[in-house]
Length: 73
Image 1: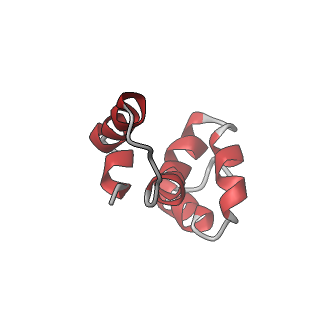
Image 2: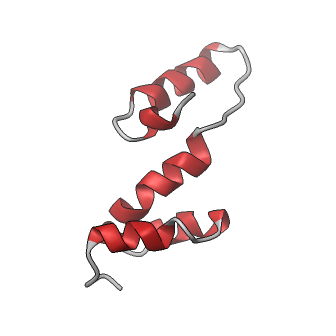
């Protein structure tokens, strides 16, 4: 699996169930990097935050992240 090109891995991971994306990211750096766009889309596209300094600070941190921030709406 790790010998496949990243583009192929990304396409494979786009078809994995959402619950398996986090697990794939734990295998190795290459799989983590390939699974991160889907992970971000699944986990950061829609989020609910309470109005508190801590929660808003976390939302700002996510929004400023180079990969996760692209998914925040």
